[in-house]
Every structure is written in structure tokens, then in C-alpha cells.
Amino acid sequence: MTSVLRALSLSSVLRAQLDREARAAHPRECCGLIEGVRDGDVVNATALHPTRNLATEPDRFEIDPAAHFALMRGLRGTASEIVGCYHSHPEGTAQPSQRDHEGSSEEGFVWLIAATRNGASELRAFVREGGGFRALMLA
Picture: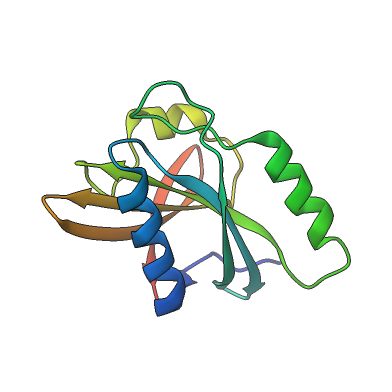
């Protein structure tokens, strides 16, 4: 039996990387994939892999499928896997948007959202569960 996911462990180095990516992409959304290892009820993020945002609208994101498949192939035979995705909400909040709800479907997949607004940034993590999102503790 698998345990219910409780937290995402994200180092200060990875937090700083995401903040830089979100600020550099502004006013567009940045996006990427989270590499990590599941350990009971915690996902330990080990790397963030930036991907090209294929969305044409500035307030949306679409991860390049070629980058997704390349990373999946690269992680074969390792202890790591793609545990989730991340993106930014420029001038928004660190909450899943209606578009995020509509564009997500994979149960147990972690969503990390970085909001940048008025020079400040906020970071929150969620897991797709039961057709919606549930907040995770960021450790």
C-alpha cells in the first residue's frame, strides 16, 4: 500500500533556481519538470529541468513533450523519476488556476507553482488527487 503524499522536499538551491527562472520568463510563464525520489509520504526533489514553454499565450504553459520523453529516457535505470512539473504565475498567486485544473490529469503528480508579484515571490506545492489539487507541505 502506498502512503498518502504529505510533503515535497525542495532544497534552497532548487528554490533559488525556480525563482530565477520565473523572474527571467516574466511576463510569460516558465515551466519544467521535477526529478525526484519518492520516500514514503515525501517526494525528495533532486533536480529541476527547465523546458521550453510551447504555449502561445503568455499566461499559460505547455511543457515540450520531446523534453518530457527525453528526460524519461534519461532516467531509465536510475532511482529517480519525473515526480511532477513546475510553472510560474507572473503577477498571480501560487494557487492552481482554472487552466491548471483543466490541464492536469495524472493522479499523484506534484505541481509546484511560483508566483511573482510586485518584486516578491511565493512558492507552493500541490498534488493531483481525486480529480483536484491538494496542498503539500514544502520542506
